[in-house]
Length: 149
Image (cartoon, rainbow, N blue to C red; front, side, top):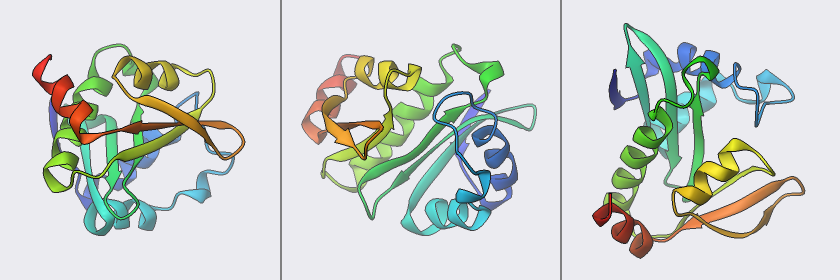
C-alpha cells in the first residue's frame, strides 16, 4: 500500500471510489465531473491516492484557491485500516507547507467523517449550508498535532 500524488490517469478510479461511498454521497454523480477532478489536482490544489496492486483504495484533494478540503474518501471495502488518516496527514502537511491560512471543510451531520475530523483535531466552527458541519484547522494547531503524532 502506497500513498502518492494523484495524476490525471487516476481520475477514473477516483470517481469509482467517490461514487462507492455510503455517506456524504452525491445526489447526482454527474455533479462532480472528471474535468472537476483534473482541475483540482492540477490547477486549484493537489491530490493524493492510496494504491495497492494498481487499485485506488482512497483519495484526498485539497483546494488552495478556496483554502478547503475538497475531498477525502475511502472505498468502503477498505475503511478502518488507517488509510484516511494517512491521506489526511499527507494532505495537511503539504497544505501547510504552501500556506499558513486556515483550511476548512464541510461534512454531513452525524457521520463517520464528522467523528473522524473531530478526532483528528479539527474545530467545529458552525454550519456549512443547511446540512453540513463546518470544520477548520489552523496552522498552529496542525503544527502542534504533528509534533504529538
